[in-house]
Image (tube, rainbow over all chains, first blue to last red; front, side, top):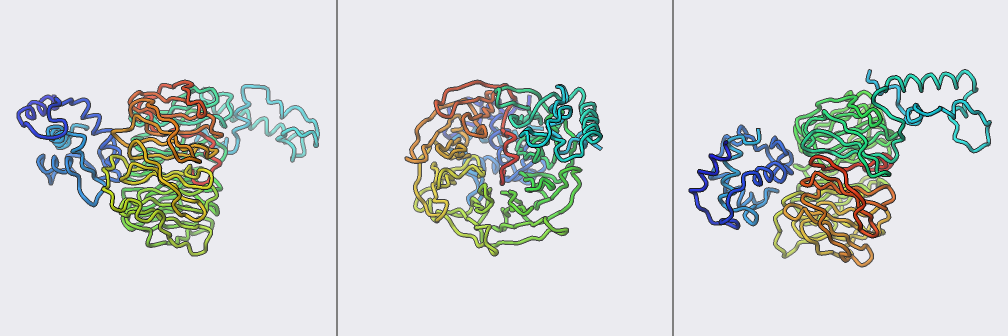
Length: 104
Length: 427
């Protein structure tokens, strides 16, 4: 349900990026968050080498900032830029998903 | 007391419990060359006592254990389910499952010297002891908030766990899982390995140091080695326990220590290997494991470059580079060293490349399926098992012909660990 809401919101926010024309595939992105973000942040997103990505841990940030970090990474840290693999809309979907605690 | 306790060192009697315990009954006397448990006992009464002990063990394990030696077995981590699949690599099949291990989303394990118990290090800080024969959890402690791996001492007495949260290393009694030492480091710890002399070696992500913890005496003795380089992310030790190599995230080289020296000093290897080249995004950190030695050279995954780096094991000088399909995660030498198998980070993690050690060229490339996370060779290397996460399969290949020999169902499989690791330093 949450995914549906997020998808609807995002449909209105057109964005440039590597997969701009690709429709949001919530199941694929959810899997990516759990398994691929999870390889550093933990599959349950409670942290690992990377920081925790639970809503509590992200309470100081917002979707815009988080989307930027996902797309461009944090230089000097292991957080890589995902722009080569994700569209801005997909990054935004992931940001919202994390802030809403989608994996809980 | 756990049901496993009577079996310490007792894999052979247990394995025999469903068949006639012939070596308790026949006495062919000394010099027959026959493996003979009662060889050093005065015979008679003691043999009877041993038989009784064996029967007690069989009774204790009734319903769980089967007649089974453990030398051909292994465990496969089901990362999403907190479970382990017990496998028999000699028959290429799953023979059981153990559940209830908590968060295994990043998990590794080590084996007791008798290959009966495994100590599993979970992401959630859980240290779980499982009995492979009984297919059961026989001990579990939540020892930290978030852990990354562990090791078992050469004598099998201690299990050490390396923690991200709260950092540091904790050491446990392998029998009881009681904590025997707490080593705070003020840093996330990585690259924890065992070396001879009841010692453990590990590195500090936040401080660029490597510490040696000596547990041979009553109180652990710590040796701190500074100047390893920025952000060590993992490390390996050679099978002889001499060379410790730490990979660095924050520097353009790796660092090596000669642990045979009284005062080991870090030595940069492959300095500036990415000089003048753009660092490529790393979507999964490489892993370093004690399978790096291929012939006389180490094969090491580069960081931020799509290549495997070759280093002479004696001089630590670069001997070559092999361009690869993506960011290498594991570069694992087949046990004979003739080939090196490489898997890759997301989004290229559907592919395996095999590199010839002599020519350093890729001689085989194939796509087992989506999400190839780990590889494990059979002890002599004739077959390799691959965990293919998103296919929910473990696949078995012939390492000479590259022919697929079989597959085993496992849900989101990650690490594969065969019991032969019990007898290797650094694994």
